[in-house]
Image (cartoon, rainbow, N blue to C red; front, top):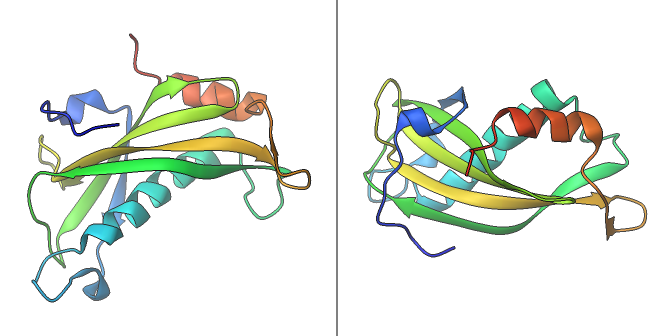
Length: 147
């Protein structure tokens, strides 16, 4: 997905989780390094899958593999700022989901970074894509952005 000129706002996301920054998140330039945002994205989406979809990642026979991702950076963040990760579902397919994720300073309306990633749900043993399990699909539908 190419970068978008439209920067989403807090109202564009269905659920938020706090993110605790760490000293090691900062780079030599004094701000959170770009690769760390992908860790934030992964943490926000997986927390939702665990808490709302009932996923038990180490034990479930079906897991989500990230197959595509992207991020647009709007403003710098640095340790020790308290952050929030906003999550929504942009597209929901049979075996895949595209999440929209925004990383916000606590309480701010405009994200410092926003992006997406795509999970394909895979049978762990067969390493083949499978339909999204019903409890996970139900949770994802709750934060699906209407067209």
